[in-house]
Length: 198
Image 1 (cartoon, helix red, strand yellow):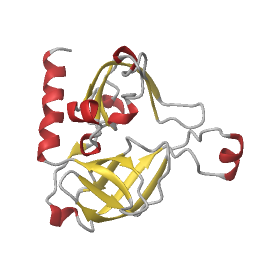
Image 2 (cartoon, one colour; image 1 turned 180 degrees about the horizontal axis):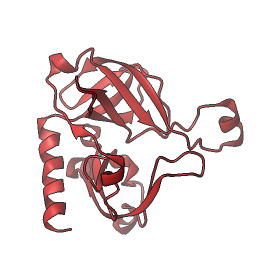
Image 3 (cartoon, helix red, strand yellow; image 1 turned 90 degrees about the vertical axis):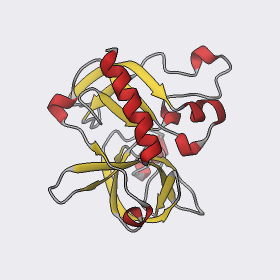
């Protein structure tokens, strides 16, 4: 959550580039479950609008693999939300980070019966490689965690989102799209549009 009714996630979680017709590339329905564990959850809501970066939709550019979902309910007023934080390369490199999400393969049982594990996990580690639009880390993530926030804490214990987990790579490590100035400007523009046209 990045506002009272908006969440930030990976663009590929929202856009199916393989669909033959444009109408089927965006979600027909989308339900958000806050605090999902097995089949239990804290809050549930449907979505109102979806925004996906144009560079990702048009050319599958993973440097811009992110989107924002506006929810029907202001659930952030009950759950809280993270602040977005841009960091320069030096501050980002070696930063202690966390990735919180829903990994598909967390136990042999889940793998054997091909049943996803609907339990939230947090992995922690440090940033190892920084690029203009992405950064990489050697945290143990798996499929199903795309769109998870990559976050750290400030000195007061507030959650700061510095990226969106989008990829796994044997060469560079697992990676995230950065919340850099360019991407923050895009996200802020979308949030402003949603405030003006609820």
